[in-house]
Amino acid sequence: MKILIYGAGVIGSIFAVKLSLSGQNVTVLARGKRLEEIRDTGIVLRSPQIGKKESVRIRTIGSLSPEERYDYIFVVMQRTQVDSVLESLARNCTENIVFVVNTAAGYEQWQRTVGAERLLIGFPSAGGERRDGVVNYFVGRGLMRIFQTTTFGEINGQGTQRVAHLIAMFRRAGIPSVYCPDMDAWQKTHVAMVTSIANALYGHGCDNRRLAASRKDVREMVLGVKEGFAVLKKLGIRITPGKLAFWDLSTGILVLVFQVFMGTRLAEITMAKHCIAARPEMISLQEKFDRLIEKSGLKTPHIDFLRHNLIDIDE
Image (tube, rainbow, N blue to C red):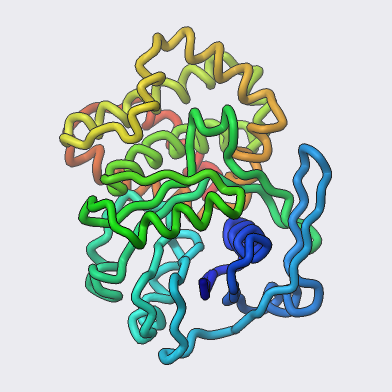
């Protein structure tokens, strides 16, 4: 298939390399220094767990032509960057545009701009950091899938052939992927989790091991997530996917579990490194989730406490 990855950050780089190595015809849209870097050296991935490197030369473009058609365009960027690319996407003739973007604000703007019939939603279980031209990365496999699996769906909840095709394509590329009939609920659930987790990390300078050593702050984080889920339930939004029911365990058990997990290298790669690079996005996500809190009418003292960590960073 002919694929465009619109965005060459960590996730875009992972998708580009894995899909290309699986036999797909991949193009990457990048700009500035990153565009020059990819043209000079290709995209280089490194797995911190095993030290293995994968390097691929990939076709690059600096802008999207209206006439150039792809089987799928994957928009892979932070929420704060998306608005600037919508008109370019609207002018292009590709029929399947997959927004792999963190949001709790729904999809109405994207539907109006690119057309509801072209819009698909996805979210990765992958991440890492880019340093000196190399992307140190992870892909969610094994135990990581308890928390999150790369997920795709239609905005109308239907199980379509095009979703089945892209899920099969990602699985062949070594990225475990699943279908969800309610991506809006999935993403709101995700934001309810990541805002409290990120804000707890910001309180410790994004040092996951320092956070792990503070039972008090891990407890605030767990209670913040529980409050976020209560907000969604009050608004009639189902916690999605269902495997996240483990958050119904007692606070004491969850605190013990997350103290252990936050002290691991996996937490550093999957959570702490992302928080360092994604502060503007986290501010935007918190603002969007605050609107849901206000709409619910619930009191959220633990979320309020954690939010100050994000505010203090920005001051």
